[in-house]
Length: 84
Image 1: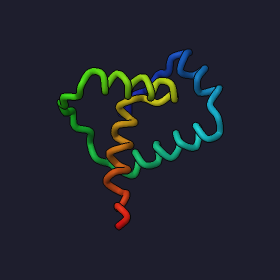
Image 2 (image 1 turned 180 degrees about the horizontal axis):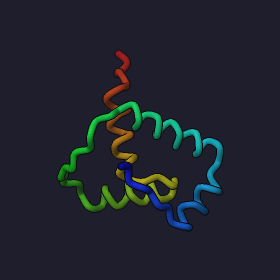
Image 3 (image 1 turned 60 degrees about the horizontal axis):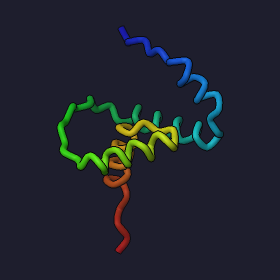
Image 4 (image 1 turned 60 degrees about the vertical axis):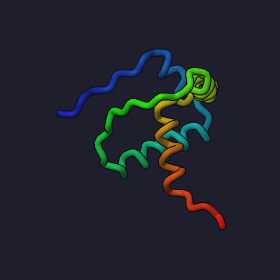
């Protein structure tokens, strides 16, 4: 049985105000997550508090979840080949 996800009123209001570009980013991220059927692994990592706070603040300003953004950056880093 799949779990049911509930959304807060605040989150639903934010979604209603999403730009078409934000919707496309969300859909693409969702598609990428569905194509990677790997189970998630809880990890522990030390990050300077100031760096983490700045990253979380930047994500919040852009309406992004910071952990999702970290995973996205990791995925992009792995899939982008450096230009020589």
